[in-house]
Length: 218
Image (cartoon, rainbow, N blue to C red):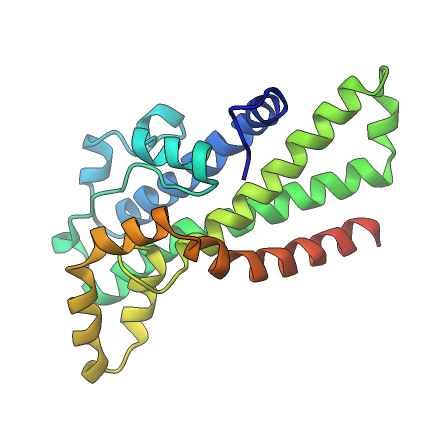
């Protein structure tokens, strides 16, 4: 988590801002595009079939990212009446967001490795400023996408992971998810005021980032 109330924290947040906007935009765009391809044409009318960041930013969710280290974009509203298979297609739309972040993390990791192998960080090093800036932005591009992917796959409402889990749950357990959905606001509130988000995300995040670091240095 960045402390944006310090000079160093604010500078790092500004470095991370491009990666943050890309990650949020691609995540929400992927939800909308998947829904559109599956028959929900309302996404075009709502202006969600774009990578323009301001179409996907939720102000409160963005502030939470800046202050707490995790948050959300503007939710994509789905009209599943046009889906051929509602249960399956709702699951696919939910999965599209986190999956897009995993793909982005992989793309940025490969780019980072290419830059590392070809020594581009040193080639563009002017007193360390340009090199450090590129390094920092690339790191956050990977980091944010890993966090978004893990965070959104938490199998509790209202996170995307709950919709994916719901599809695979036996019928006798689906009622539990319906009950939890009623308390989505309180679940979000618990994540905001407690350290639960970090406790869930940190172990898997650390493991994935270690794998990425191993791959880059390989």
